[in-house]
Every structure is written in C-alpha cells, then in structure tokens.
Length: 326
Image (cartoon, rainbow, N blue to C red; front, side, top):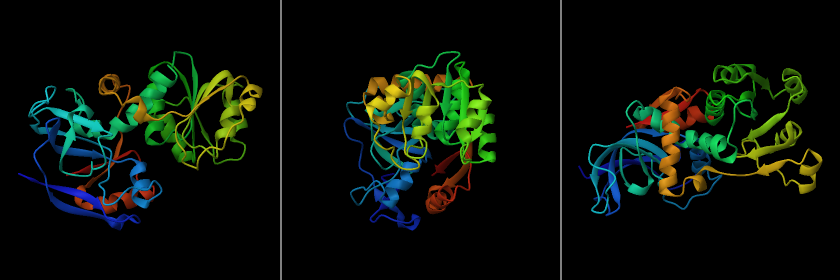
C-alpha cells in the first residue's frame, strides 16, 4: 500500500479549511520509518495553527503527535523494526494521517501496559507535565504547587502526578464544574478564578500558605496574582498564554515579592535531543504504568470527521483528551 489519507491545509481559517486527501506515500528514507497510525492526539495548538494565530507556510499538514505500528524501516534505522508499537511528538506537522513516514529519531517505543490511545493522548501533554514537575522544578513531598487551568489537559496531569509525588496541590479553574474536575484529578483545593476575590479565597483555603512553585499556562490574566501567591524564594513558571501573553515583568518586582524566580520554558527544547526525549518519555510511561498519570479520553473522532472534532474542541463541548482515529 503506497497511499495515505492526510489532512492538508491550503488556506488558514475555520475548521472547514481542513481537507482530507489521499496522497502517494514514498518509501521511508534511510533514517525514517513508515507508520500505520492507530491514534492521533489533538492539542489546542492545532487550532491556533489552523486559524493562523501561529501562521504556517502553506500547504501544510496538521497535528503534532500520534501512536502507531511500524510498517517499514529505512536502511540506517537500527532501533526499530516492523511490528513495533511506537509514538512520537514534534516530528514535523502532519500527524493527522492514517499512515506517514517519520524520522526514527523522533520515535519512542510504547511499552506493554500503555495503550496506543493512551500514548497518543498523553505524549505531548504528559511530556509538558514531565519537564514542569521533574526538570523546571523537581517537586518534592510536602511542596505546595499551584496549578492554573487545573481542569485542562496538562493541568489534570500536573494535579495527578504532583499528588503522586507527595505535593500539596492547589488548582484553579474557571467554573465550579471545572473545579470539581481538578479535585477529581488530585487537587487538594480547587478555586474558581472567574471570581474577583479568588486569590483571597485561595489563601483562606490554604491557611495563608503560598506556593513553592506556580505553574501558569494562562498568562496575561493571572501573572500578577501568580506572583502574589508564590512563597518567598519560590518559582513562577509561565508555560502558556491562554488569556494572552504575559506582560513584561520588571526584575525589581521579583525582589519586592520575595526574591522570586521567573521562567518561561517549553516542551520542545526539553525534548530536542533524541536520547533525552526517550528518557523523558520513559519516565512518563512509568508514571502511566504505575497509575499516577491516567489518560482521560473525552471524545474520539474518525479522521474523516476532523472538522467536527475541531468544532467540538473550540466549543469546549468535550472534557478530557480528544483523539482522532484512522
């Protein structure tokens, strides 16, 4: 079989600009493998790229992560063989496909005990949580961590994994229903940050205790509250901008708020080296196998229904991870 179904964008805009095409698939290059993909992950960056918030050169594929089975290997590939179960992220856009060629350096083995669906749903979000909890700040038992957007995909993993590491987990979310999701994911306390007095409510709930580290994926609307809710010598980690980019912070403000540390990391540099990427993925899969991290799959859509999948995601009509299936 030398063809593949792939989602292709020739223009940016509404979900309808995504077109499913059948294309010729060449043999894998010398350092590539050919995959029959069994599950494709969805991330909100897919929407931003499709709409042009993060412009892409056209034409382009879409999607950053998937799991599947190796069908063929290039001449120089040594670490993978036909039949291996694998997953990838950051292998170049084009994960929305039933089959594709991928650089072997971007693949990880999926261990027994982790399903293809779990791997596709968790790799991108889980590796984000992995570097936040194990690299940016190595969470220790007894740490208080504050997780904004705790009902989101990464937020729930941070709550689950942080709790398993022994942290006291405080989550924020935008409604009582989402706060309930955060608590179900492991948050000891969940605060509705759509309310104007939420920082005072949070401090009341924690007995005045502030966070050793704040994980802030919201950005513009929460950054100054994040600084207020960080303990002296603590760390504020801005890793997203759901409400817009965080404003510039004067270094002197960090001093006044308690000699704080501020950083803006991201998942791709943490996994740019293939060996480090596989080490990080192994740590994530170990957490999955131990039950510390779970894939909460809220909806599954066939690749043919990718437009409906994006509509559902934009309408926030699903909870948990969204998957595309071939």
